[in-house]
Structures are given as structure tokens and as C-alpha cells.
Image 1 (cartoon, rainbow, N blue to C red):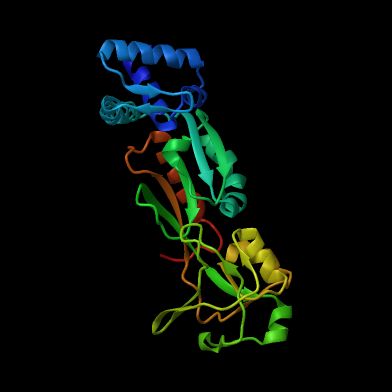
Image 2: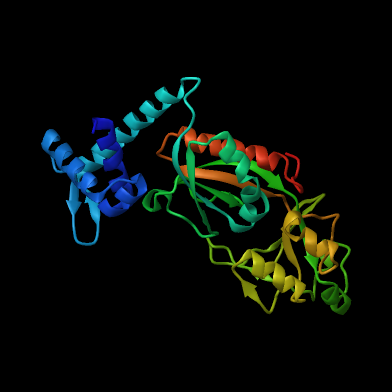
Length: 301
């Protein structure tokens, strides 16, 4: 085992805080991880890791060495990737927002794997905030504005959004034609995973962005439940058009206030700030940008 392999193992232990998880990520025996760390500490003459029954933490020397390892490993990967015929390879762990994954990414994955046959994908489906480093994830695909400054974001699309409600709700409460006619109406409250507070309704107008908070009888935390609540007649929702195309075609939902649309929804690929982008992540991000460039319901700009 060369020193770069030992550095890879050490960096993964620091990120995962576990010998076992590092071994699983790198697809090597746990004994190999233990032996590599013993050799590294013996060679350097320094203790790099504090081991407990529950967790492994880097020492002060370990933290400093970890930062240097990241730089060296990134330089090595970039150098190898600079050769024309050096195709991206290895395990890529991605976490995808659920509706984006179902509508756009998963159906197109055969194309990605045909282009990059040496990349192995491990995909999770989640809307929650993810600690990429601690959970061993290389990148995430998320919708909405970027909030976490510990991650670098690349926006790859802006998706058209609409305001809609069920025909039954509109028959009962009336159909507004202007954003200032919403008094007495209801909305399904969608709670932000970042702030824990419901999002207001937003409308782009000639005077600028208008935000309105409407009372409602139901609060939700999931995209599918949000749409289902609108179909059930609980009030207005604002969603990407692609997500409810079938419901609009079937007459289960109707758009309103089309002259005052919500701002487009950003779609971004995120990865840790302190890591140089690997060839695997770069290839995946570029491919995602291609997929969303052709996506129905994409907003210009």
C-alpha cells in the first residue's frame, strides 16, 4: 500500500469518524484500515487519531495532517484526470431531492452509466439537510435557495412555478384574479426544513415581489403531501409546474393568478466547500446540467 492510499484511508476515517465506516466506503477490510493507520502513525511518529468505543476523532496533529492530505489527494486526482483518456472512475455517493430524482434523474441514469461505465453510483433520496462530510456523501441535488455556507453550490436550472388549488376549493371560496384579492382564502402551509417556519406565498408583480401569509388548517413537511393537500381542497399551494402536470391535465388542480407567478425554483448541485471537485462529481454535475437544460417546465435565466 502506497502513501496516497494511506492518506485516502486516513481522510475517510476523519470524515466518517469510524474505522468500520471508512472501510465500508472504500470497499476494503477493516483490518486493512487499522494496519494502514498503525503504519502511518509509526512512520510520522505522531498520534493522529483518538479512538473511543463510540467514535474516532482526529488529534490536533491529525486535523493539521488531514488538511494537507486533502490538498495532496486533490492534486493527485487532478493530475491523473488531466490525461485525455483518463476516464472518471470509482464510487460516487449522491443524495437527491425526491421529486427531482423521480421526474428527471433516475429515468436518464442509463445514459450517464453508459458514458461513464467505470463510475459506480450509490444514491439516496431525501429532502433533509445532509452533513456531506460526516455521512460520506460526495454531492447532493437540491431545490430552493442555498442556505448552507459550508457547501459550494452550482445552480443548474430554474424551474417554473405556479399557484394552484382544487376545483372544489375554488368553487367554494371563489377564484381570485389579483394577488390583493386573497383575503379570506386559505393556503396549505409548507414548513421550511431550515427555519422550521411555513413559507409564505410569493408573487412577482410590476411593483416587485409580494409575499402573503394565509391562514390554513393543515401544515405539511413533504412535497407529495403538499400536493395531495391541495387536491383534497385545503387551499392554495405553490409548486413547480412539472410536479403537477398530470394533476392539471386530469383536472384535479387548476392554476390561478397566472399573471403574478411565484419566482422560479432554483435547482443546484452542492458539495463540500473544503474539497476540490473530483472528476466523478464534476462529470455527474455536468451531466445533471445537461438533463435539466432539456427539462420541461424550465424557466429562462
